[in-house]
Image (cartoon, rainbow, N blue to C red; front, side):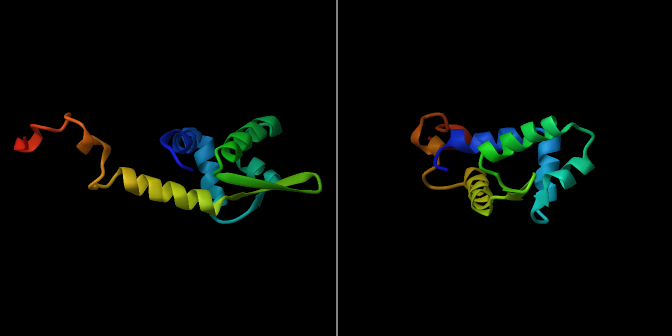
Length: 110
């Protein structure tokens, strides 16, 4: 992932309560779609929609085995998202606001 728009897709996907809960479930390891479905009051097609969004943003990966799909977190994406969140919430020398005049005059700095 290289830019804000790619990262924002992950946060948008996590903006849905059920998808955030699914990610929480997958933090314990790979799960069959049937096991995820047991936890929620939703149809198979609704679960498929949620999983499609989580897979498209790169947060979750799926593998098919027989008639079921097994889902797990994509650890590379999880790591990138953690690093991105840390970068955008930390002060840094090359912060985008330091290249503009918007902060001049704040806190007595000229």
